Image (cartoon, rainbow, N blue to C red):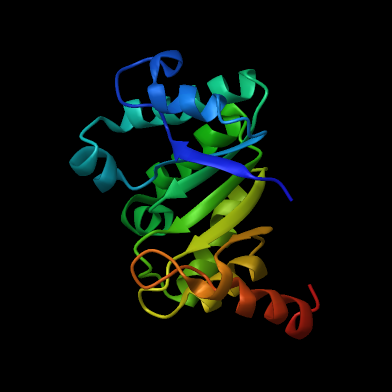
Length: 190
């Protein structure tokens, strides 16, 4: 196992080399860096208040910069499932940008915890077909679906599951690894 440092993509309209957050990630001493970036067009235009093109540039620039500095990069596609349901073309463009820039793994995030298991399966399967790097899943438990959603994502091709021990986490919690691991191992023989 490896410890990973966690941060966001560069800020809008600056160079990756000038972003304090990215400098801090590089100075963390961690070989693996996890960066999150927006994949829902609404979050781009209304929350971080930038253009859709600039957001794609933020993803590309950040990952490229970190990879050029010798780091293994995992991209967390924040709000991916909501973004996909709203504008699938743009959501997929964000994960393609991450792949093209050198991300080793792309993690699809159900940041609001509002996606149902059958939707997770279909959307994860579609994302897996769109890119060639490893896919992961990050589920929140706002509707009590984080374990089921993580299992369905694995069934659709996800190879990494982000979660916490006994599901502790933001709002209603994250995926409960102490339930997911035995389900995968004992029930699904994975």
